[in-house]
Amino acid sequence: QAPLFAGIGAAGAAAQARGDRCQAAWDLRQVGLGEPMTEAVQLEHQFLFEDAFTIKTVDNSRFERAGRIDCESLAFAENNLELDINNIIYPVKPGEQVYVALASNVSPADNPRRLSTAWDHDPRILGRSIMDQFEYVMFGKVYKKDDKRQQNEAVVFASFGGLLMKLKSDSPQLQDFHEGDSVYLLMRKVEEVEKTF
Image (cartoon, rainbow, N blue to C red):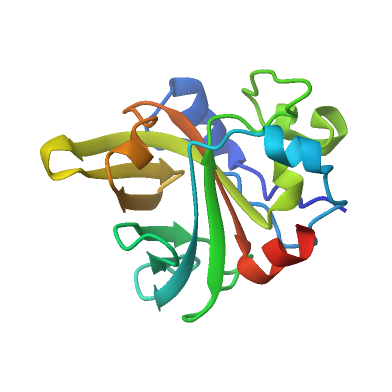
């Protein structure tokens, strides 16, 4: 069974229609990973960025239903992620490891198409997609990028319906991000990654 959309609500739909920077977030409930995709589909999907992180801290003091996680990369010392998540539907705690990917599209690799509404993401219409391999997915927009090429440092800022992300890495790893880009953030716990590959 594929994860379910939590929905974007009337305010989110209105924001989408206006094209606001802070677009509606589509949170997926943790209800299972669905059927494993074929290796071919997994390998064909292109991500803008992907890495595995250890959650250092979870700050639940800012909002009632959201927590800010501070994460450090397992493999790249320069990679750091600060992210607001709905930890009511997807609880996390310090010390857990998560695999995070960012993509511009989540439609099936064998049938790529532009997804513009919540209905386009309905599994009954979309079919199998890379989202089936993740537990938590949000949709948002890049609203700022700082790229200090001489220092080989870059930071990407995105908003997922008001849930914010700050991703720091070296310039080459973040070269495909631009202000105004729509992005999907996909997350799952590392133990689930190990089970599916």
